[in-house]
Image 1 (cartoon, rainbow, N blue to C red):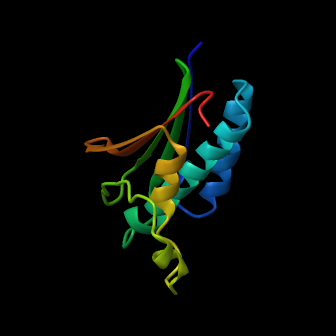
Image 2 (cartoon, rainbow, N blue to C red):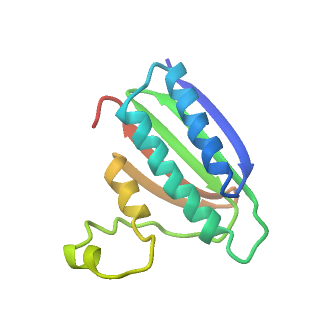
Length: 140
């Protein structure tokens, strides 16, 4: 059986905790637990943080919508915002020298998203910027 749930909040750091709780409640209601839920929370946390910090940079915080579609052996998460568009890319695995050097914090969010999700896509249209994350059920 397919189900869809949505929550819309303001794009502020406090929203991250509410999104994590929403993912956990929605997944548990559908019988999804464990690593799948943890992966979804991590990927959404990183994607939402990028929107909050960069998508709405130099703008008032706008809406950030999280939609979970569960069915067909997967969970599809769509994160929609109305800030500056940003094309995500798979940065690959950082080399050891990069990890060991003194560097500024951050920069691994996209890596975590691509490592925990089975599919990542992004589109911009008249209805906003949409990052779609897919996690297959039963996939580690």
